[in-house]
Length: 269
Length: 323
View (cartoon, rainbow over the protein chains, first blue to last red):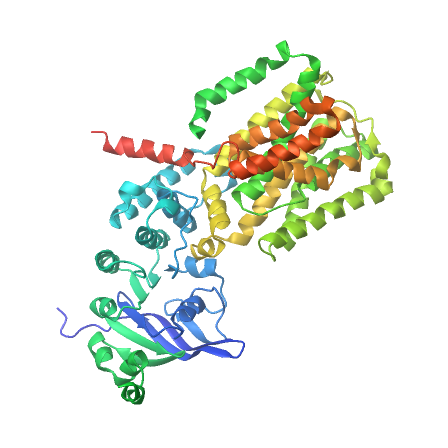
C-alpha cells in the first residue's frame, strides 16, 4: 500500500542548455527535467527554438553550453553523435517527413531495428541459423510495430507512395523500432487533418502506456493540452513557463508569446 | 519490365546458358564474354558503393588497377603464382578502398565525386611514375597462367569459366548483402543519412565498409584480368574506365543487381558490335545513353523493386497465418 504518490524518477535532466548560431541565440540557458513515463509537451511560437532543443539533445549538433544528462547513467548527451544518442535509448522523429522513400514500409521499420541486432558481414553472406533467426525476429517485431500504428496492411508499400499523414506515422514506428526509453516527437501531427491527428495522439498515448517516456513538440495548443502531463513553453530561445496544461493555458507569459503583447493587441484593437 | 523475371528459375536458366555458351560460341565471343564477366564484377563492385551506400565514386578503376598491379608486382619480384596472389589482390585493393574512404567521410554528396576523382588520378600517376615498382608506362608482363593442382588455365574457354565462377559468387554476395541487415543500413544511409544515424546506424563505419568491400571486388577483377592478358599497364585503369563503370551502373539502374549486369553487358558488347562503324560507334553509344536517361532515367530494368526481403517476410507471415 502506498500512502503517498511515489516521486517519479527523472530520466533526463537538461542544465542551462544554450545554442548560438553565429549571432543568433537560438537557445538561452534552457533547463528541463523529463520524468520517467510522462508525456512532456514542448510548445512555443515559430522560431522559439523547439527543434533546436531536440537537435541538441539528439546529437544533430552539440549545444554551445550546458549539459544534457541521462540520470541513471550520468552521461552528457551533448557532443555525442546521433547514433550514440540512439544507442543510449533516445529516439526521435523529424519535423519534415524523413522516411526512407526507396524502401517499403516494412523495411523502414526493419532498418530501425539495426541497433539492437548484430548480424554483420559474415551473417549477411552465409545467412546461418543465427542470422536467419534474427531476421525473423526483426520481421516479427517490425510487423508488430506496424500493427501497433495501424500500418500493417501497407507493409509492402513503398514508403514514398504513402500519403503524408501515414509517412509521419511510419516515422514514429521506425523510431519505436530502436526500442527507445525516451521518444522525441517533432510535431507529429503537422499537416494532418483533425481525424488523423486524433489517431496519432491515441497512438502516442498507447506508446506511453508501454512505458516509453515521450517528449513532444506540438504547434497545436488544443492537441498538446489534451495529451501532455506537463508542458514547457519556449519563446525566443528561453523557457518562459512550465507546468500542467491548465497552468500553461492561463499563464500570461504564454498567452503573450502566442497572441502578442497586450499593448500590441490593444494597439491593433 | 518487372524484376520478377529474375526469379530463381530465370537465374538458373541464365546460368545454364552461360555454362554451355562456350560449347556453341566461336572463340571471339568467348573472349567477349570473358570481358563482359570482368565488367560485370567491376560494375557490381561500384554498385555496392553507389547503389547500396549512395557514395558517388568516380575512381573505381583505381581499385581495379591496384588489384591488377598487386598481382603484377608480386609476380615481378617474387614470382608468386596467381592463386596465392589472388587474395592479396583483394586485400590490398580493399585496404586502398579503406584508405580512400577516410577522406570521403568528411565530405558529402557531389564533393565525394571530386575526392574520388582525384584519388583515381593519384593512383594512375603512381602507376605511371613509380617505375622501380611498376615499370611505369611500359607495364609488367609475363605473369604465369593460373595453375590449380598442376593444371594451368590457358585457353579462352578456361578463363571464361574462371570468370563465370567469380561472377556467380559476386552476384550471390551482392544479393545476400542487399537483403541483409547491412544492406538495409546502407540503403538507409543512401536515402537519408541523418535519419539513419538517429536510428543508431553508425554511418561512418558502414560507409568505410562499403568502400572496402567494393574496392576488394574490383581488385579481384583486376587480378583476373592481369592473369588473362599476362600484361598490365596503367592505360587500362584511368578515368575513362571509371566513367564507363558509372555508366554501366546508371544504365542498369542504381542498386539493381540484374540491371547492372545487363548494363555492363550492353555497354561492353554494343561498342564491340558497332566496331565496323569505327568513328560513329561511340557517337551512337553516346546518343543511346542520352536517350535512355531521358526515357528511362531509372535504368533499363527500372528501379529496384526490393522484393527479396518482402519475399522472406511474406513467407514468415504465411507460416504464421497457416492454421
